[in-house]
Amino acid sequence: MERKCVVAHSTLFDNPHIDHDAYISTLKASCGNDPSKIAAEIYGRWDVVQGAFFSHYLSRSRSEVPWLGTGLFQMRSFDYRNVYLAMDWGIRAPSSCLLLYRCADAMNIGDGRVAAKGSWIVVDEVYTCITDARDGSRKWDLGQVDITTTKLVKLIHEMCDRNGLDLSKISAGRRIADAQVGALTGNARDGSIGSQLADLGCRFIAGNKGPRADGLVYISHLLEAAGDGSVPGLYMTAKAESIWATFPYLQHATNKPGDCEGVDHSCDALRYCLMTARKYRGVSQANFRTY
Image (cartoon, rainbow, N blue to C red; front, side):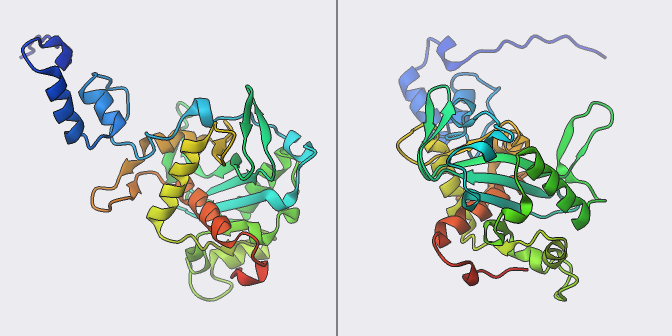
């Protein structure tokens, strides 16, 4: 039997019979001072993703920058030594390959904003998830099971082309992947994903990424610094669709303090690149293990 019900939304501020300050203090403590939870449980803003790992730091107004297309290659200060590829390989899960540029000098990024020297810009991406045939929406957590290394390299070439870049001019020492890609399909050279990519002219190095929590803290630090022209920050164009789509929904891991969980393929690719570049800046490529 159907029944009618009435839902009346309210917040603690609608109750005149409680000590608001004390109640807010208690709720903040129970929320672990997470801004998204506080917004929901105290102020009734349920549109905010609860427990989001990067909720403190990610902001479109600070981090989003215009996509330059071939204008990146045409900048006076452009140097291939500042171009990076970062990859997290997957089949059932999507593969993510990010194209990044590190600012050798302060860079005007529009709207009067300046990215400080040492800032990172995620310029573009290849993200091999399934697209829903009915409405065109992307299933960020589901990989294209028919993806092959040949198809992936073709997509990477296309990404470089639309940004006016030549893949062959991006140093192998600045193409960074998860170290496990060297053994994903066996130890034999011909069997690994890394060796297959190398045979197709798209060699990667094994990322020296360090502890996962350290990398996530570094990403958070760079996101928080975005928009401050005096310190390096992390910026993304609209082409970095997977980052804008998945970062807001990464959650704090339940059993691993300092870690996150969710659709983290682009987060991992970014982490491999940033941590490797940070640790080995200025070190000869001979020190890296390539596939």
